[in-house]
Image (cartoon, rainbow, N blue to C red; front, side, top):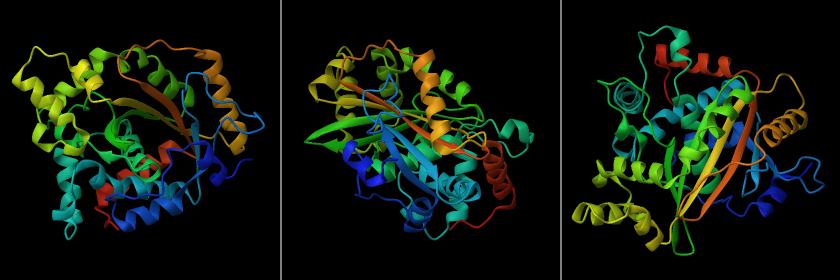
Length: 318
């Protein structure tokens, strides 16, 4: 089995640099989850996923599912706000605001409905990209939620970025957190032709344009949006090319391990994807990279149920 440190050499994106995550949450995340290895393994006992263009990342829970639930519960505010500075001395208020105005959550809904909400996985994807890849926020997805609609936010599941060699990588990803890895993988890969298309990328940029003042200026997305607002006849994909941007599409799958050993369940997932989805078709004008992030857990339902319990009781945040 390849060590975490060996995996880091294989996957140069993984960074030790840090970001604006609360130290308490960063410490909890570091104690709860670790990178087991990247794919392919050196001896090819587990190959890389065929559709990936970068090394796939395989994570494991170091402590317990309850700690992972605690990461999600405490990460809601991090995920929901571009900047938490004004809320650091009143995190409980920030949590209430987030649950009412930044993501789909209805306290009055039946538990089986609340268990299907998307924020559990979206919070983890956001935090993992921050912690392991130093991916900063382009804009919080919380700006796109409309309480009157009470519907899941559409578009990519996260809007983050990494600056590399003077250019910007747009880390716009997708996550599914299901009991069954087959259902999670199907949901992601059956829409990848849409997700990885010029039209879809442009539609997301146009959504972001509605909140251009909230965009991280280092992403340069605001420059593209402002140019388009000044001259709506310009082609957004041409502007993305002009700014030398790359689209990075991490696909995170969180799923029950079915009481199998770690290597066995990872191998089973990889074999399933390579058998059922040996190739995918997508068409994006800018350079595109994609890879899987796999995280087996004991029970997806138990984790989500614990998060709901803490929301109901207004458990204090760390």
